[in-house]
Image 1: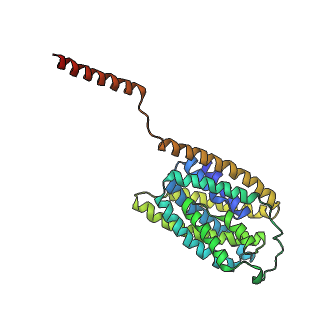
Image 2: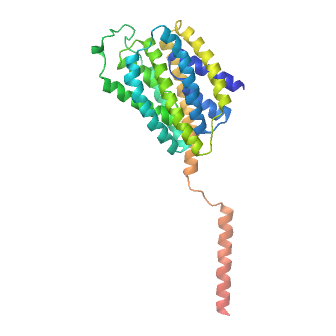
Image 3: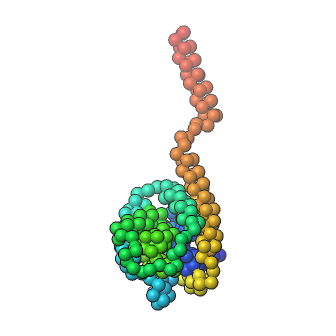
Length: 290
């Protein structure tokens, strides 16, 4: 229970602070600490992060810090990408999904460690923004990752909204939360069909506990967001993602390599078979001599 309480609080805090990173914690907590299966954990992660993202987006919406144009051009293609990613995730081996997940965490950390340009004061003129097709393509890619490994994609969405959408950081965070909620809903629905077809199911009690405590954490994170230096905060979280991603890759990659290695026959069995073979040969020779 301590793991659940701590993990869910961290998920909410990171979503409230950064508009990203919640599911980067959710999947490992559900798998390694709670003990759920990989497919179930990915589906549960989408439900948890989606619910928290909805709650975390409300104060941003009330403060008019959501860019609905970006939700349209980024979020809708992202939902399509999530369907594709969830379909691929259902076909992939669990170990492969987790190794890819670890790689995604490392990529997220590197993106977060990049120093942003001057994005706080940007003219909202649409002529300065990237074409809609570029924003949509980024949305599809983020959606595929969301569906395949269960990450919300916020670490891709926020930089994309800042760089391509030319949004200020806090506006990008609020917009990211809405997009994450849509993508998570689509991904969860797709995984539910897969789980039912394979006689598996999510644990709704775990989802509700994570979601409720995570929502409280997102409210706290939102308050802290206005007081802390964003780049320092992202650097600390990026360091955590590097450690977590490295652990997942080493742990799951080792299991995959071990499973893929051909099983060697124990020396004692080889020796025994060799003796039996020699004995049979000797018997046949002796019979021949007689």
